[in-house]
Each structure stands twice: as C-alpha cells, then as structure tokens.
Image 1: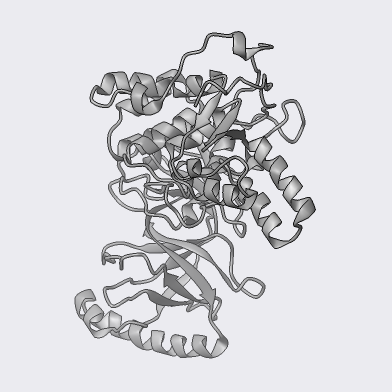
Image 2: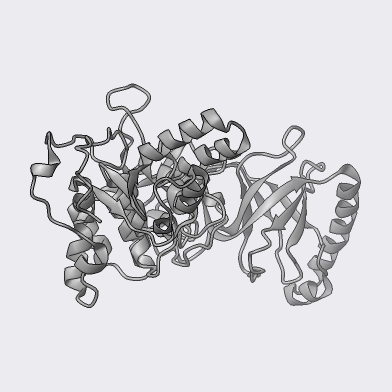
Length: 435
C-alpha cells in the first residue's frame, strides 16, 4: 500500500497554507531516502497519559515534516482510482475521515496529501484535475457540485492560504487563524471532549509552555487556558448560539465548537473589532444596552419592553428557543446588550440578557472595571413593536406599575401573567465587561 507513494518521483505539492509548513526540504528524489512510518492508532500510547501527552505535543511536527501523508478510509477504499469523479468527491466529502477532529491536522499540515483507493492513491490536486476533465465533457450542475465538495476537503482551501509579505495577507497569528479554523471544525467530532482544545492548539502552533499548561488543565479550566492563550476575539462572539461555559467570567464562551450546524462567524454581525480576554475572565466589548425594569417569575420567553419617557423605546425580547427559562432574581437588575441600536432604520437585532453590575465579583479585573458589567444569562433577539402594540403595552404597564408600588414583589409576581410589559430605557454607556 505504501511502497508506491514514491513510484512517480512526484514533487512536493506547493504549500502556502496558513496552518501548514512554509518551507519545504530540498530533496530531489524521495525514493532514495530512508523513511519511517507513523500511524496514530499504533504510535500514540493509550493507557500512559504522560507518553500520550508527549506524542500529541509532537503531532504538528510529525505531520509537517512527513514526506507523504496517506489517508486510509474504508469507505473511500471501496472505489477504484478510475471511478467516476462525482462518486469519489462525494465519498471524500461524506467519509469518516472528513468529519473527525484529529484528522483535520493531517489534511492542513501535510505537505503532500494522498488518498488511498482500492487500486492506488491520488492527491487532492489530481482529483481536481479529474474534475476539470469531467467539466469539459459534462458541464452543468453535477460538475459544479464536484468542485464545491472538493473545496471542502479537508476544509475551505481559501481560508487556509496566504502569501507571506503581501500587505493584505500577512501571517495573522493565533487570534487571526482561530476564526478561520472554526469553519473547518464545526462539523467535526471527537470521542474525547478534552481533546478539542488540544487539537486546536496543535493546529494553531501553541508555544511549548502554553501547550503544557493546556494539557495539565482539567474540565472547563482547559477551555479557559485556551482562551487566554488566544488572547483576543471578535466582540460579536458574545452573540453565539452555542452551549456555553458555566464558569463565572466565561459564560459568553461556547463550551465546545464541534458538531455545530453553523459557524459562530455570522455574516450579519461585525466581527472585525477584536477585544481582549481579561485576566480572571471577562470580555470587554462596546455595544448599546437597555436597562430592564422588574423581572419576575411571571415572565416567559417573550418580554415586551417599553419606556415611560415619551414612548422613546418599544421592543419585544424573544429568548432563544433552546434556552432554559432563566430564574429571574428579585434582588438583581437586568439589562439587554444589543449588537446594534434598533429604531426607525433597524427593526431587529441580536441580544444578550444578563445581570447588570452583579455583586460579589470574583475577578480582580472585574472589580476594577469602571463602566458597565453584565453577567451573561441568556441569548435573545430584539425587534421593534408597532405603534398599536406599544400603546396597549404602555397602558398595561401603567396599571402594573401602580400595583407593584402597593404589593410585595412576591405578590406582584404571582398576580402578573406572561406578557406583562417591562419598563426599560437606553443606558448611556456602551462599554461593557461580559462575564
């Protein structure tokens, strides 16, 4: 199977990939060079954690310096090299190799990637050439589908390439590579959840001391170490729709990036303005916010918000359907941070609901923060309400405000029903620390 990898004296594939090697060794004839073999399932220790960690730490070097990387997938190996390119591209796109996390590094780090078929092997470049010939004889829908699927193997080609020295395509560093990498991992899975950040660290080329610290961390602490090492993120990451960490200071962060139906990088939100993760947790962002009035157990997933200041604000907050209904605390004040102001020209937007300026802050950096602080509670969308709805809500709000003054908070909450409006107004600050 492997003795024919050098039978055609094929030159190393040109590699300008962000995650892969930048300089290739100058070896004219690999067939005359002694070579060892590496197979993850045989060479990575399973029962000895110390040896396993050492092997994993070297994975980047192993795949970058390998003369050839051969992909073995049983489903792909059922096909001959001469099989129809539509069938070959479809199987490569749907096979297990394409959807496992650890195999991503094989694809993006290898200088010369080969796929094993029943009677031989082909490179991704040879497969693209097969498709070019197919397009000439069979133009149309299927030929475009083949090109589309091949571009996903092993992941989006255009997000992995850059040309050193050009003004607009400089080496972006870990913070710049990370959002690009997410496009390649969101549909992948791993059997060990703790491997996720380790594999990411391999792809992003973490410094040795940071890698050691990451491997030593356990549970959610490992994701925290990972976040601090990356250092900065696009501010709109707080509007992600993924399951989140539970650790104070990191509730804005997804607990996993894998197995997602879509990326957190959304075209309709601004991800260009990066911001730093503070020591001890918390992400500094700049967005408009609405302070919310009394939040009680009577509130459901839909909350109507109005202003008592000349009807300057009228909107409906809809909690995301996957969110559990928050336990609104009577002794806390809440706010909604919006990705943009809503009004005449912007009728809806994304939002984060949270506790405004929470007490008993654990982080020293949070205690020193001199503007707004929001403890992440839930995700939501916000949309403007029409004038008729606003008038009815305003009248209802006046009645409930009168009741609230005359009753205890417990009695008021029991009397109120879902749909009762909440008083809210724009906050002056747009500088926030999200915990």
